Image 1 (spheres, helix red, strand yellow):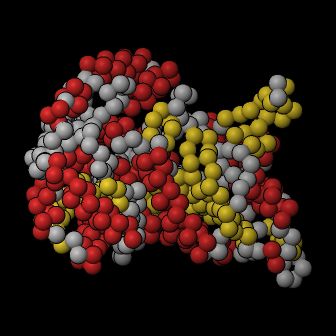
Image 2: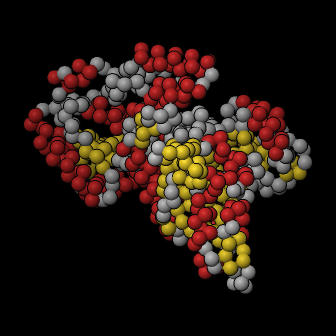
Length: 551
């Protein structure tokens, strides 16, 4: 497949484009920022400084190709998934690169998706008894050192501040990589009695981790997330909390993002540094790699013992609290792109789409303009009143065909077209983003408020369900059940996920990673019944694990 190309800027602005033709098919027209290289080159160039020579050669080749193809829009997914992903981010105006290698600027449209995630999560957090607050971004380095496995796990990613106000600091400060340490420092001051428990808080903040290999939204030097922190009187309460929050994330993934994640427990090797258990939701992306989309950690008493976070129980005895922490981040935006997008660009689930419906007015003669614009304004008002997020694109600088492609690329779930004949008949044409061509069009939908509102809401529900169904079918068709290590290696070599019985050692797990590039993504909560034999050792196994290459 060949990437579509833009017409010249002159042709876009020529008088001939001022007339709005009646739904003439426009196949090759695509939107692109003509005056700067695509994000693909920008992020690749930022990574070159820390890359081996062969990678630098590849970056220079890529930059050269981009300069020769500035009218390129979106690389086909099947041709180069990574280039496609970066093209979509650039063209849909989700993010841009920052001046520091590995950082990104989240643009309004991309941030609006993150806001939709926040809106849903904030309601769920408060429903489950959590309160929002804020902890400082700067953490004394001595705090990080208090929990041995924590400092070992995070040391390579830490950003340190050693000078402040022009003077060398007495103690270096860590720029927040996560907040378990500073949270425990404060919990120790707030928790004294069993009456102070449970203590359950959440914060929406930025996090800094000095990643060497970056990918916008998926892995950047700085990213946004929420992190929940709770303290409990018993281990059972902490375990229930950790499981409750991974369930909140799972429901969000299925019901809002239309991503069929697999929820489960991480292996010991993959458990969060400082936790006794890590629960996860794992999503299959369009290239069949796994994305860890959210985690919930049972911290046990590891941090409370390190920081002396204690309470007096009902019997007057001093006890260490039991804790959890849990988080999702802007990585979920990348997951939505890579799960649902196609060669035309984004494809957003309606429940998270910043714009659910775009209205395109179409006219040819000057005398038709007023009636068409009046009708589209009425449709917009009707849908807004019904609580639907709607955009009326009544700009006159672009043709309807250009607008069709532009809003498809932005992933808007539904398009409503209104022309002179529609005004005369009191109807509209509705097109679905997830069903291309005539198959996705419905003609003659009445503008009568109750009919149009019901139709639009039904179509949005259908799209939401269709995206989840499509992603679930894709996931299930790419998971292979294996019973031996040879079968596992074969599945991974084909780009599949491998699911099989596992009771082998940590060393065996690391061997799989070294030899195949795949890791245990999780031991799913949903387990098959019956006796099982470990695929690696032949010993009895109680659980199956899922192996996959991942981001």
